[in-house]
Length: 294
Image (tube, rainbow, N blue to C red; front, side, top):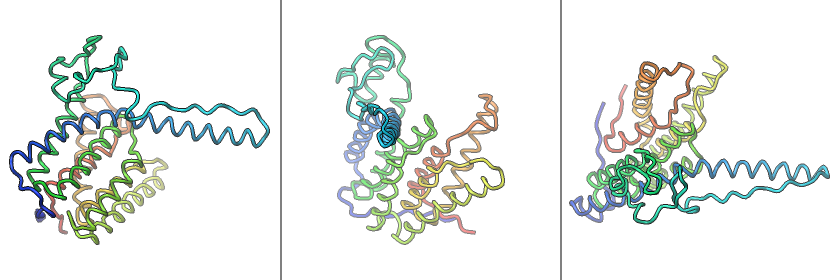
């Protein structure tokens, strides 16, 4: 096993304290937006899928000279309606939307109905801030840092959406894959050839594993979103990172599954999202890249 640390590409500012603080503050603001994205994107996708089904059924009924049904238009998006308490539906004022500070000032409760606010919201904001600041420590104010921020933010969103819904949306995994290939076209993390084959190898490996497991067990053991996420990680970190990605994700996933069985009473048939563990492995190898040599 060999460690590798890449030098920052296209450095604009050295990793001074003001630069690190600036990226950390940016991270906490983006973390607040990620909370909205994690909450609303799956609902938006569900509405979109329902509209597509209704439109298809409406066309089919029209083709067979049947009464047309009205297609429901979803009003929800990332900016409308404004953020509100899920319990009392009270619209939050701007002062209650300050990341981290508002949650602490309100002592973790809604200002209107005093219902407890999930601690996950400040945790996501804090995690995003810490990882964003860490990227500035590693690479300063550089193009590498800007690319790493996108990588970090999308992985955080994907991990929590998968935890909530067992879903890794194409609207996030596909841009992540293409962004990795573009970043490494400029050599920000690994040579482009390694990125290309990392994307191919990541997808093909889990695709083949999926079909082998299905062939012998008759069950689906891996979600197809996991193929795309591992392909995206390979596009960012290169083909040589794939064994490490799979090792960290598998060990952490197996450890969590064992703890869930022991302490939470989960059965072996309870599905466990693999996306969060792939995201974890991607973040580990982003900051601490290493090769597994056999």
